[in-house]
Amino acid sequence: MDKIEVKILNCSAVTEAEKNMVFAARLTQRGHSIHSMDDLMDLYDKSFSEETLKNIGHLPHPTVQKFSLITVAIVGASRRFLAQITRHQNEVKFMSASLQYSNYSGKADFAVPYEIMTAEENIQELYMESCQSDMDCYERLCQMGIGHDAAGYATPQGLRNVLIISATPYQWKHMIGQRSCRRNTDEMRIVMLKIWHELYELSPVLFAPEVTGPFCQRGKCEEGKMTCGKPMGKIMKPVDILQADYPALMEGGCHED
Image (cartoon, rainbow, N blue to C red):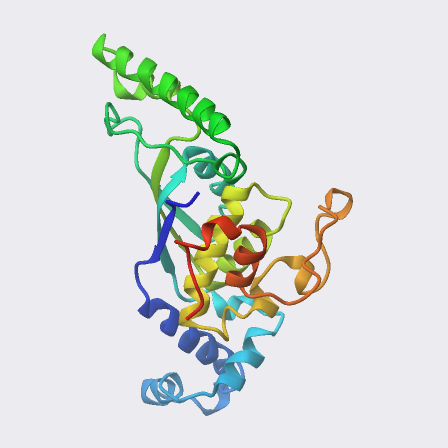
């Protein structure tokens, strides 16, 4: 978990998302005053305050947050994470490294679950031996003429992967809210909290904790009877949650400036 890296590939899209959100909201109330493209562009380029952005971001009208796409790269998360995150399909696109075209012989690396990463050395060794055993099988199959695609079935879930996700601001906020909840796996939470941290650094208003974080800290738990029973208890920024729940990552992880 300490080697997972995330990066927003099109940082300007966050600023664009803010502008488009305010513009879209204003457009609904200015139709009577727009008689030409020049009128529309004047409205599009009209400045706005953080307070305006905050007020619109809190409105129960998600459509205004769907006119931009923010693309994030994730390096080092496991293929188990890939299988989980791709359950999200609305307004989200994924591109992943392929087991069919990539040859991992002698180049495999493994994501180590947080619980194992912080466990005794003999437990860590047992986990790594299991992962390596699976990869040894993969390599032997490849050497025997089996294609990478078929041999890929022998690879462990912990095999590190490269993934690109493109989504609207609204969908990022939904995914972060759902997937930073303590009902998720540690890896899922760590990745989503790191992504949220990057988005929050670029736009602390659009991705504020009050509208982006776990559901339990901005209303109520939406898991019903499946609740984890450990609500955040207060409004927390992503870096605060990482520090509270995953302190072993913070030495080389994300810190608040």
